[in-house]
Amino acid sequence: MTDDLIRLYAAILDRQQMDPAHSKTARLIAAGPKKIAKKVGEEAVEVALDAMNEDRQGVINESADLLYNLSVLWATLNIH
Image 1: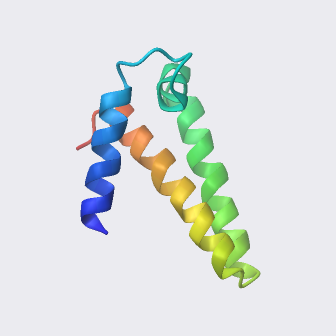
Image 2: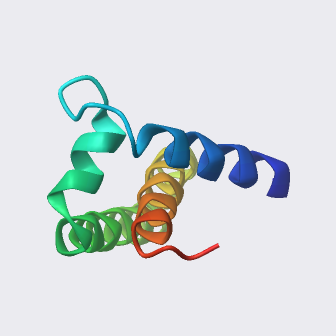
């Protein structure tokens, strides 16, 4: 899994320089850390709710969203 996160982070760094009109990631980064942090919180809540409902596939799907948004936040705050 570590290699997957490294590749995800690298892809996010590549998209930082893209036009926000052509990249969801660039658009999210342009919105700033407060917006990204809000997305991280929303996704974390969704993971927790799916876990409480024992929805395994929901946890998997929402965890992917959480890791993506968290990685975008790390890149925005220059966390390596």
